[in-house]
Image (tube, rainbow over all chains, first blue to last red; front, side, top):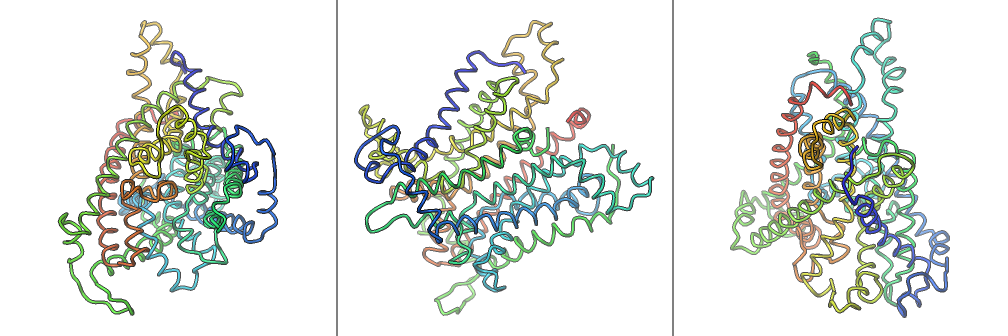
Length: 268
Length: 300
């Protein structure tokens, strides 16, 4: 790949721009509230882990993380398992209404969450799923399932059709071919799709907050409680924020070699 | 190679269809239902026909005025962030190192903002921009710029835009990087033999190869900026006044704040319709670009 002049400088500046606000959050999370409000310091002069200790010992805080992880995992599993066969169908066959269906799916990926907040609230209250991780997991399917189909379709199309044909000639049944041959071949694609489902479910707040009240409250909603009589608890807010970045950073390390292709939705 | 026609493929698609239909069509029917009715509480509903839609599309009413104001605001916002993020993303992609450990490091740092929950993105910038405790706000004020995103319209806009650039430029950059990676080295060698300039290499080789991914990038960025809610809501709460109230924020205000279900539903449907139309245009362009490109698609 041929690069442009001054690329190191441009890239460094951009990466610093990306990291600076994150650094500031981390910095604040290790400061005492007194230090935050009273002086402007570039690093914590009296470093403290009190905010983190509080999050890990107060159940209303750490249960927020567990709740979030629950619906994210449920959503990822549902999305991938329904999207896999569909991706294969879209990639290999033509059938009645295939293009319209694909477009309809895509349009749901783009649907604004704000439109669905209220009707989802009614729907999940009516079927007694309100305030459970299932409600949020199912609600997030509206954008994650289309995305998973879209990504996986790109990866399945990268598998030569001769492989299917050979397998069927060898007497593989369809389910067996699917599990034994196709899934291992697109394992990286499944990883990428799962990563994206995880990511979009993890970062979404509007639906997650609307569909939960007490028992399944996600961490993002818990964070809005840091305003107290004594004013904003900035240190605690920052510490909670830092902890929400960690799962994403861990996941991304595992898929780092596929990030670029994954973001192109398997289409490069 | 052409796909074979097989109607049984519907069985493979059925689970997806059911899951998405459950999440999309059922709630949408509720919205359609609400949009035609008026309520005075107590679960009593009255038929209102297209009344809400008339009010919504008439800028002289309160509802219409709010809708159009937030729509133009949102379109302006989308245009600004596209104009910044697309060129910047391309430049960053072109600046990526070629090989070695630094590639992985850069990719991970680039992807980091994308993985932060949206309200935390808001929180980060809220803290970063505050004149009293934030590095950015403090630095700007100490060099003599009177910056305060809570009270000044322009500062609020600038903060929201810079925040979006911070949050999403990486997506454009990663997409472009993926596109660039798929260009065979032979193309560059040929260009070198022809004595092509740097600019010619960009316009004749790199840009055409990035076409598809750029289209995806523009589509995703437009759509996501058009339905942006959480980040500006956390930072500015739609203010000062209504200056950063985008469509989703307005909609949530009407629906969950005032519980004006009819108005909110009518707004939702028009909002959705705009999205579907834009989506259709992109989809058509994308599939056309796809069929033109089919022959060399095999290199994946």
